[in-house]
Image 1: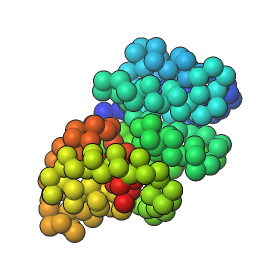
Image 2: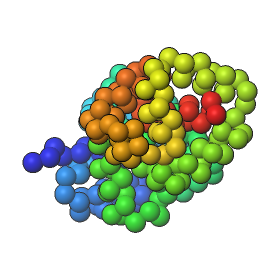
Image 3: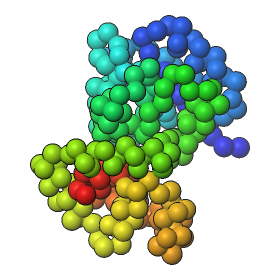
Image 4: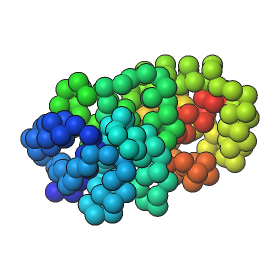
Length: 217
């Protein structure tokens, strides 16, 4: 039996929280363990409930979801974060991903897709499709300031040639399986490379690796 994925809901709308809890209860292997109405309450709720995944709204009264995500992902062994919101501007998406969120969903996303996203993120996979990731990150690279580009290049210099090859393909939106086929590696070897890349770049997930790669382009 696979372990149950523990989910914390963060949204200032009581109806949205109730609807998400009811919806997720209909999917096997997912349990809502807590719900709070503001980003200011996230740290205490995570300490209490130990969720695997946090579904995080953006606009809340005291502390917004992006600020809460940044603080949460700076913790030791943090839960994964999916930003779930009605706001889909590029600025919101990019700040969420740079903060360490593993993905970004709109609230009108069909329930099966939200449940699938929770499962994927809990398994360590980003929930942006490769096509969306490539399009979005291409815009970031084109618009990135010189200081960000220089910093990204310095960080990539920490990687070995093999690690840079893997990171480059992550930046192109490739999955582990696709990277393995292109570089003639097993999926297990790609995962081992990813572990080293995350540590050397001091980031929490592959989406942040992709942002660095595209900043340096």
